[in-house]
Amino acid sequence: MRLGPQLIVDILLQDLPLDAPPRPLDELVQDIIREHPEWNLDPTAKAMAWAPSAQKLLRAYWEQTLQQGRQPRFAFNSSSSYMIQGACFIEPRDTAEVQEQKRKRRHWQNHYAVLRELDPRQFEVLCSKVLSLLGVPSPQLTPYQGDEGIDFYGRLSVGDLVGHGAIFPIFETRLVVWLVGQAKHYLHTKIATPDIRELVGAATLGRARAFSKNDAYPDLRIRACDPVIMLFFSTGEISPYGWALCNRAGVVAMDGEMLATFLADKGIALRTNGAGQEFDPDSFAEWLATG
Image 1 (cartoon, helix red, strand yellow):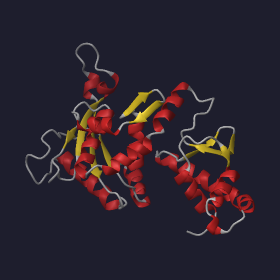
Image 2 (image 1 turned 90 degrees about the vertical axis):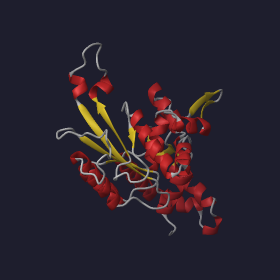
Image 3 (image 1 turned 30 degrees about the horizontal axis):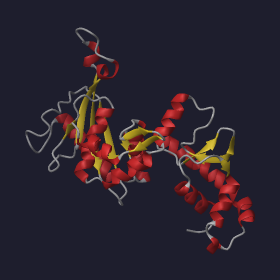
Image 4 (image 1 turned 135 degrees about the vertical axis):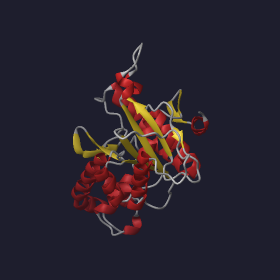
């Protein structure tokens, strides 16, 4: 890539630790230049020239990332947007709730690494367990072969979220929504629009129970007026056109980084020790194999 502010930003987003303390942007730019003597550049002079453009690029990345619901790799310090810090750096003014979430999110890259090591069937199992974390009481996993385009699904009522009441639950139980999803275990291929269309088509056929097999999805009984939320989960990346189609069609998508952040937020496989919390791969494998 051509030398310039964009390359500096790319390196910064890749290498900045999630808990890095705040530092002036020009110092970070100088450090990156010093780490690449083959560029034969004056760190101080180039930092002064590139830092303003790098700040604009970081702002654009920040806004786009938040709009997509993804985890940023960095954060602007609350005292100054020229001070750059790790996304999970705990500031003194952070509330106890924010501090706890940042402590959990520090580990999302560990979750991401494990996600990418799963085989395709294990990833489908994980996606069905995500439904459990969302409150679905009995998520269903479809057969690995001949799944008719749907990998997992579940039925969620408002009562499952707010409680059914002590006796004779009626209204909350009748307010239901179906979550129907597809899991794509891609490591190097970006999700494109045909993958999204496949899910939408399968879910639409599922509502009409128009399957090639008469006994497909025996528990998937979507009524004419039941709302359906379509979920698309991937270990890899989603292309810009894929994101655009998801947003316009109402498909709720999570790429590998978003899934990893979600699992970290839920505290999956995080164990407390004397130094704080740490990610435990064995606990993750146990969680995946349970239930």
